[in-house]
Image (tube, rainbow, N blue to C red; front, top):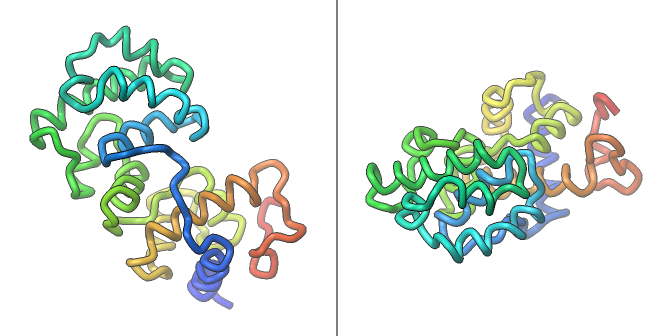
Length: 210
């Protein structure tokens, strides 16, 4: 089985394991998902979900957040870690969306990645989950680890990993495939103690690094 065939087999197995994958960040709009995804860097989704209700209560949209004192934003997002950088990114993000996009989150990956605090992973997550746009496969730490462990790629570079996965997975499945990989990496194929016994991908896994 070559890499392309293995990736497609993994995608089918993941679809059986997670037929309706759901993003674990709480959000009610593309703006809220964008903010939550930025806050999720180096932080658990559960912790982000504890912070965002107060954040969105005080500053519901880009206009309110752009006008907020940076120190107050820092105080609210502090539990997510790296709070100074994240607060600065969120305030800059809000200002950019107001000034360049009329207060609306853009639906284009090239426009998204030009926003403060937004990289390809974040753009792909928001476009896929909030808009249903298959712009790309979001490569976070879980996807990167699984892709290497399963030998779906030979690269350690997120852009190359994204390209390798996208070459094998049908475009319309990119958002769901991304989320399934994340969920499997979060709860089964963990970094330190992967639960290989009973894993639905075990027959396909080459267990690199395990």
